[in-house]
Length: 99
Image (cartoon, rainbow, N blue to C red; front, side, top):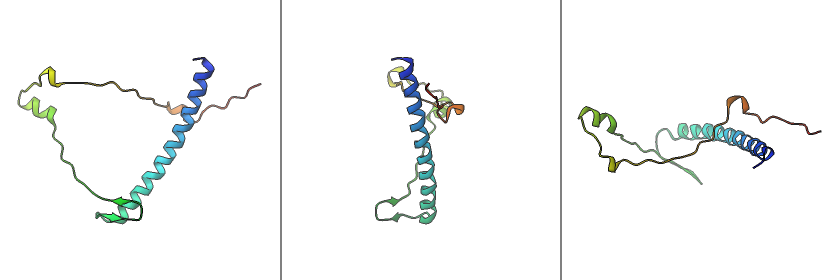
């Protein structure tokens, strides 16, 4: 891949990320309004439903530590993922003028 192709992908990614961030913020605000309007109860509208659920979590790491337990290696697995982060100062793509 050429330097110019990388620069183009960088620009496209930042522009798409900015659009997605703006849309996500708008969705967050609408979601907050819907939750407030539901008053903590199930709310069914034409195309969506606001519902509630609760979840209980167990801090297994602390449990194992407190009880001096070790998980055998055969039960431990991992995965690898890639993350793309936009540097704060690069939120808006630079505009280049070709001469």
